[in-house]
Length: 68
Image (cartoon, rainbow, N blue to C red; front, side):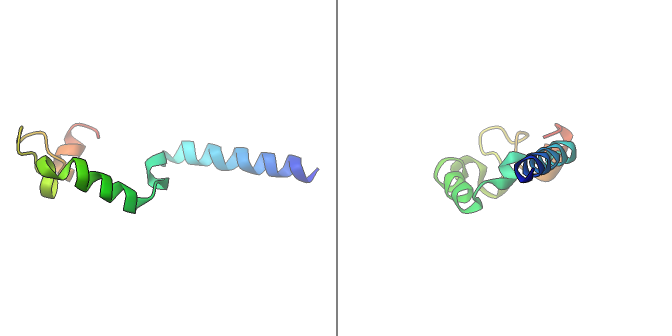
């Protein structure tokens, strides 16, 4: 009985996560994300800019414009 309740609770929790659109990336370790960005992306995307193609940057306005 207890296992069944746990299973139901887990299913409800998973349904809520999917319904609310919480990205799985939110669960990732932010320290590792920052380190990954610094090591691979920051050369071109420092401060959210793009040194190669200026209009393809990581600034909030641009991300919203392209539904990112």
